[in-house]
Length: 317
Image (tube, rainbow, N blue to C red; front, side, top):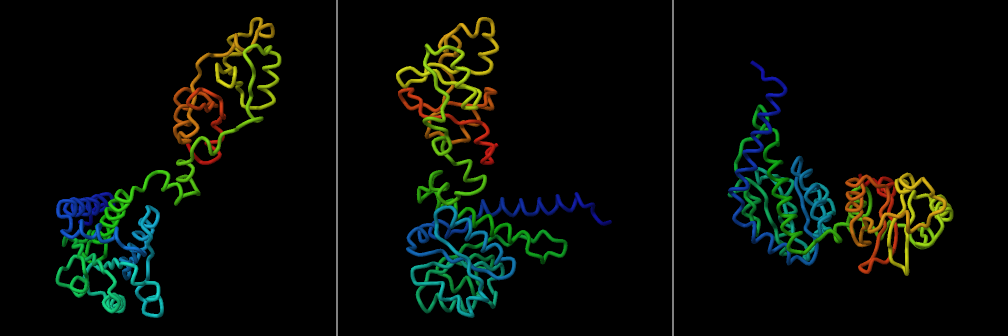
């Protein structure tokens, strides 16, 4: 009886999950040595493979490059037609082949041998041509493929991808690659936006709605309306003493125009440091159901304002 689609999906995921668990328990003996070697490479990590292994190679190279380890993928077919020039004595090669007998890798192996380029093999066959040619071996467990005929690259590519992630993260940690470094590599899109500091997006100077504690509420309302943030900062000698919000206005409607800004403002308002991440500011605004947050320095001096629309505009949500 043919299994249902759901049963097939569960079988595939279970097969691959077991393989990953085995890989974690049987981590290649050379793993630590490979990381140590790659940390010393002055050039790039060149990742290569053919077919599905080539797609894995592209992903591993991209992950390495985006986490602080210069890397590039080279197609073995193109390498045989001139792209071997991309692989220099300053580089190291990570070659991926499940069988270790991929013919298209032959020219790259010969190139590495000729110029003394470190070669790391990722394969499940210790006695294969690739494994014997390599200076380091990342031996994958001989786990069954997840497809019905046991031949389509499924489990093997999942393990290779995961081991590539393990390499990238190990290298990343030992290089001290932090959030700031990640932002430098990911300036665009949602990832970059999530790593932005408040200081990068906050409104400053003349854009800020600022009044003194003794300012008449009529003038304070004009300032709030003119700046368009729905709030006003009550500032004395440069320090933030309170915030006037729409809620404060509603609570003080009786005799509002006869009062002063300092009388209406909420004292000791929630604030954010300018070097905090924009995601932190958004979390504070969401948690307390407010739409704007003033940024202050260590001495409570007002330096800026971040609005929830700034975060939404940049895709941080």
